[in-house]
Amino acid sequence: MKLAPSTLHIRHPSRLAPHKAVLIMPSHKLGALHVVSDRPTTSGEHGFTLIELLVTITVAAILAAVALPSFLDMIQRNRISVTARNLRADLAYARSESVRRGGIVSICIATVSEGFTAAQCSEHANWSDGWIVFVDANGNGSVDSGDTILRQRTSERNISVTSISGSIASATSIHAMPAGEFSEDGTLRICAPRFNGIDLSIQRSGSLRSQSTPSTC
Image (tube, rainbow, N blue to C red; front, side):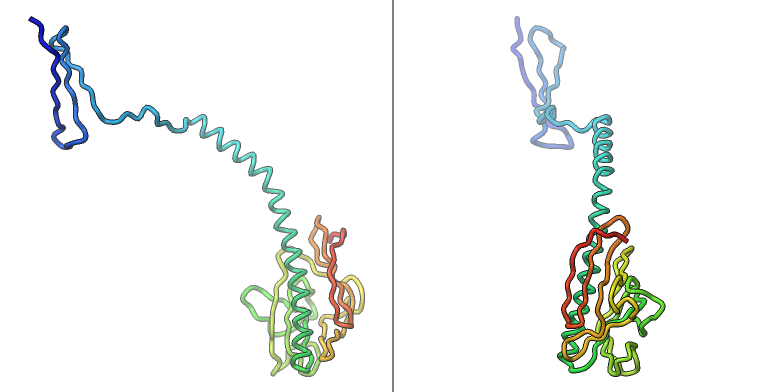
């Protein structure tokens, strides 16, 4: 007499549906049990092998080594542009404030650090150290009691600002006059080693002009 195949569903004692085990007792081999689970298989899932991970890291390191110098160059060029733009903006601001207030507004060389307001102009510093814009009541180019500091600015890191021509080469301050004129004229060069700079031209008439130059520091 042959026994018909039978199945028996057994629920796991600690987990109810949907997980269950199936016992299959084939008729041709009594005593042999095959346990089959109806839990979804994960044969389609896979991760990275150690070799694949190492190859990925190596490729990423090579790409970073190639891109890093270009990225640093871009940062340095941006610092040159930011310094030139800030200096020109502050000169224009001093001129407009002088016209508006009807008095002298000066911009002078000063050693300015982040978060620190320079109290005095400096004759021993240069434009690379920073500058301040202030109401210069007596027009002496220094911050006296009662003078108001309007702005302070630091040069970008590793950026040089030097006077290369005109009367500004020997001056430590520039006065903006109520008529819209500047007391000094000349050219300031903003640059960095190995990089083309920007020349900022200052006219006594009050005009400002900046242009790129192939010259480096």
